[in-house]
Structures are given as C-alpha cells and as structure tokens.
Amino acid sequence: MLEVSRLRKAFTSPEGALSPVVDVEDFQINERDHVALRGDSGSGKTTFLNLIAGILRPDAGRVAIQGQVISDLNEAARDRLRATAIGYVFQTFNLLQGYTCLENVLLAMTFAGRADRSRAEALLRRVGLGQRLGHRPRQLSTGQQQRVAVARALANRPILVVADEPTGNLDSGNGHEVLELLRDTCRENEAALLLVSHDRDVLSEFDDVRDFHQINRACSALPQ
Amino acid sequence: MISTLVLLITKSFRQHLFSTVVTAASIALAGGLLMSVWTLREEARKTFAEVSGGYDAVLGARGSKLQLVLNAVFHLEESTGNMEWKDFLEAQKNPSVERAVPMAMGDNFRGYRVVGTLPEFFAGDAASTTRLTARSPGRIFDVTSREAVVGSFAAEQLGLKRGDRIKPYHGLNFNEEHQHEEDYVIVGILEPTSSPVDRVIWIPLEGLQKLSGHDPKSSTEISAVLVKLKGGSATAGFLLDQSYNKQGTRLTFAWPIGRIVALFFDKISWFDRVLELVAYLVALVATASVVASIYNSMNERRREIAILRALGAHRALVSAAVVFESAAITALGMLGALAVHGAIMWSVTGVLKVQTGVVLNPWSPNGILVFAPLGMIALSAAAGLVPALKAYRTDVATNLIPAS
Image (cartoon, rainbow over all chains, first blue to last red; front, side):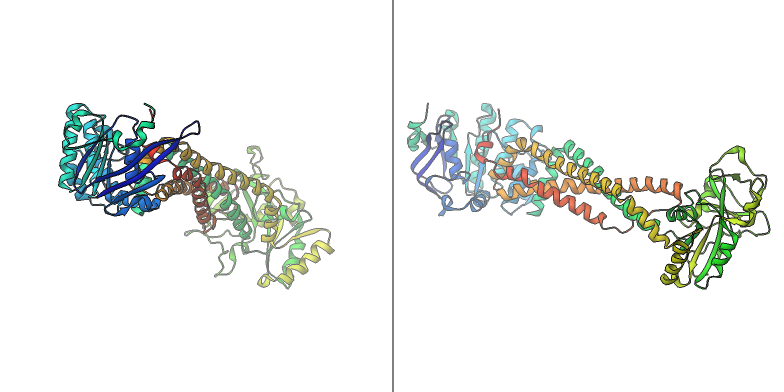
C-alpha cells in the first residue's frame, strides 16, 4: 500500500552546506498494517513522515500510496491526496485553538470535500469526547486534545495514518490510552498505521517495529 | 470552498476580535467621513441651486449679484441697498416678466427676519410646487391689516401660533432695545417648504415700510424684486441682463438664480477639494491599518496556516482567506460607515436647516454611497494581497512545530 524507494531529502545548513536528512532505499507497508519506526530525536523521522504525507517534496526517489505516486504530483494534487487518503497525528496535537472539537474534525473533512457532521460527532464519541463537542482545545486535558487529533486524522477515512510521537507529550497513562485508541480506531477504519517513536513502552505494543537508523542511511551522516 | 472560506474568516475575526473591531471602526469613521464630504458637496450644490422659490431672477440696487440672491432668496446677507418703487412697477410691466414680487427687509423678530411683501408672493399657480399655503386653519395676511404669516421653522423655534401678537425689532440682528411699537397678529403658519421661506416672518409690504422709527423716505423704497420670466425665457433673461447690468447703472439684475449660486460654489470649490483630499487620505490610512493589522498578526498565524496546510488546505485557499478577511473587515467597517455618514449628515443637515432653512437629503441617490464602499473593499482586498503573499509562502514543515 505504501511504497518508498530511493527517497532522498537534504536541507541546506545555515553555513550553506547541503545536509542529507533522509536517504531511504526501500520501505513498504501493506494495507491495514501497523508499523512502528524506532528512532532517536533528530534522526529524520519527522522529515520522512512529511515526505510520505506530501508536505515536503523529495529531492529524489518515489513515494506511492496505493499506486499513486505522491512524489510526482504537483502541490495542489498532493494537498488533495493528503486531505483524502492520509491522516496525520502530531506530537504537539496541532489542533486549531479557535475551533471547537467538532469544528476541528469538520474542518479537516471540508478540505477533502466531504464534511459529514454525523461522522465527526460519531468519531468524537468514539474517542470518548461525546460530551466535549463544543469545547475548545484549551478547555481539554492534553490526553483529550490528542484524542481529538486522532478523531481528526480518521475523519476522511484515510488509508494511511502517520503518527509522529503521538504520546510524546502525554504521561504514561494517557499515552497508553491514546495509543490503544489510535490503533483500535485505525483497525475499525481499516487504515494502515505508521507510527514513529523512541518510547520503548510504545514500541513494545507493536509486532512490526523497524529501526529507522537502519532504514535511513542519512542517519549516519547526521550529527549525533 | 466558499463555506470553508467563511468559516476561516469568521474564526479569524473571533480570534482577533479586538483588532478586528478597532480596524473596522477606523474604516467606519474614514468611510463615513469620505461619503459625507462628497454627499454634502454634491447635495449642497444641487439643493442650494434649486432654491429659487420658483423665481428666475432678483432685481435690486446696484451691487453684487450673489449678495442680492443671498439676501432676497436665502435671507442670509445684508441688502445691497434700496431701490425705488417705480423700478418695481417698470419691471412688472415688462412684457417678458410673468410675475414680479417686491420685498422689503431690514427687521427681525428675535433673530428671525421679518420681510414685507405682497400677497402675490404666496400665490403662484395652483399646480406650482412653489405655491405657499398656510396650514389649515389659517390664511395669508390682509394687506390692509397688521397681520403676519410665519414660516414653519420660525414658528416652531419661536413657539408662535395663530392668534399670537408680535412686535418686530429694527435691523436684521436681534437687539432688544430696538423694538417697534406696532403689533402684528399671526393669522397663519406656512406649510414647511424645506427652503429659506420657512425661517421668515412675512408681513404686508406697506406695513414694514411704515413701521415706527423707519425713515419716511423709505416708505416708497423696497429692498429687492423677485422676478419670474415668462416660460423661464433665457432670451428675456439675457435681454434684461443686458438692459440692467450693461446699459443701466442703478440696478443689478441677478439672473439666473441657480447659476449664481452655482458660481458661488465654484468659487469655494478649492475648499471642497481640500476636504475631499483629506477624506481620501483618511480612507487610505484606514485601509492601510486593516492590512497592517493583518500583516502584524501573520507571525502568530503561521502555525495555524501550517496546520491548515497539513490537513490538506491548498496555499491558494489560505491566501484567499487572508484577502477576503481584509475585504470583510472593510465591508463591516463600511456598514458602520453608512451609520457614521447618516450621523454626520443628520448633524450638518440640522445646522444648515437652522442657519439657512435649506434641508438636505442625506440619503439622496448618490453614486458615492455605492462606489465608496465598493472602492474601499476592493482597495482592502488588493492591499490584503501583501499579507496573503506571506500566508502563501508559509513553510508547512517548519511551522508545524510550536515556537518555544
């Protein structure tokens, strides 16, 4: 379902030198798979996820989701594909502060052209926030905010959910609950899950854990 | 797409409520000022030029045409001097003159002019909009009696009603020590005309000429003659203009009244242009303040834009939201500007009514009431392209990470 080959991305350092951040020869995920990527901070995990999600354009290589080569698409098409086929859960939640829980989920739906209030409400009920539909992020605990982010990521029935350290800002209890919720809802929505984390407890929940240091050849070139 | 834009804009309004309200208020003041200056200029020029009381010209003693018109039609200026009664009779007999009505000024009642005239002044023809009628019950004065009819505004301000008695004061300016002895009984209050007539107290011509304290010589003199030409004939007007102004030396024939008033406005048009320029500059500054307000908030909006982009919003959508937000703030401001315009016009109209009797229509159809809002909205939208460009260039990956 997700096929990555010869993917390369480098950034120019403040000194002007070109610094490779991602250099992945081959990476694949099958439909409905749950895969965890283990990697330390600064190993290029987030850049890798941003390349998969089409937020960044690779310098070279190919990213394909269900046969559609996202790396070859223009920006508007990548935006469209990201809205319709990919859900993104961030470590810092990235909820829109001026919007209610329901509006945060509904807004994500409008970018895919499929705003469905009843589904948005159902998703929020599913993540345990049925009584918080009209609350704004600041009125919620961090655990609850990440639950909203999970509901938002699944709003457009994506085929792939990428999660970047989704429990990184949560205590262990909340982290465990959110992780369980994320995995359950991905299963219920038949979405594949690609999660990156450096937390051993999180990684231990996955059967398929891959070491990003081995996948990303640029890691050895990155400053430790 | 449109509903998404509306949602993004309304949310932004709520998040930046204070700056939105302040900038919209500045637009309201600037837009209201711009529309008022423009409307006042246009309306005043049009309305004053139309205030002729149905007459085409004023004949008076040698002097300024404008002074003659201001004195006899608007009851604002001093008289250019007196003219002989025979001059009136001569004008009346002229075959191209349909109606000539003499007037004598020089007295007041508590600051409101007392003018002597003949009943013909009120007659007109039945179909004429310039015909003056007394409110029922009431009538026009009898020339053989000491009777007066009062303009509607003067009656309202002075609290005069039918049956009241007044003693005029000498001179155009109110001085308690210069009261005449004669009593005049009010027999009618005129219907409102939204013209200077409303501010005048009218008595029989002979009565004013022979008031106690007036020079006996002046009993055969008048201040001016209002002249209506047959069919408003331009040829007749031109010939009389030649006769009185070019060949004669004693009298001035102020014709046509509307053109003389328009020339007055032309003379002070530089002042209009200065006011207009100031209004344009204020509007420009207010528009710039909208853009500056949005531009300054772009730093705090970067993360939100990055989140929207990460969720699948295209650059063009978030940029369009900024442009439309700029336009929407101005649109809100211009709604307020209509209220400000109404308030300014209401105040100025009130002052003008008190000072001249002329009533302007604040909501008279005027292109500026459409073009100013549309122009300012378009200008704001165009200026909004500057912060929109900043939104367009916002880097998603960098700005998804919260600023520490």
